[in-house]
Image (tube, rainbow, N blue to C red):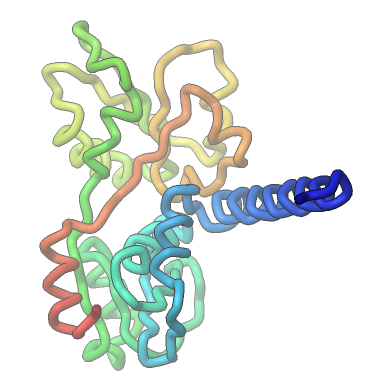
Length: 236
């Protein structure tokens, strides 16, 4: 039978484990932009196996936040050590395969033409789950305005066009807000939702991300494209 002392020890050990796991989950979100659900998928996929350098791929994107998210999507589905790499870095990615998106095809090829044989490109799309996250009770009946936060006008225009696939112009109006300080859009009393591009989302603190008006413009791989790459490279 458990004694009061042993029960107290178990309780303290459980509380300590809970605190430890909470710290891991908080750091995963704060430092790597990985949600608790995605972290769980990663831990499950890593259980009982070790990855060698030959299993390593580098996921290259213009935003550290988006690169980490796309790398997490790969790591959650295949036995691959997917590392994130931002184009903001001046140095060359680590040796090995490079996974990138078609959006940055020319820039990546111009930077590292000697690595062309190691490059594989896949299409990405706005996360189809975004409308449900913004409107869990259902799409509003009247036309709704959404703010889109970006620091570059042309990039904002491209993202806004892609978002019309999820938020059709008949029901939504997407107004671009160009700024170097994304948090400034959350300080007003406006109730209009603010969609932050991946790199602008990466500038927000965890507390700012929890603002009820703040939403991430999250991109996910087009499943068929990634499946083709996985088959070609022999991922399991």
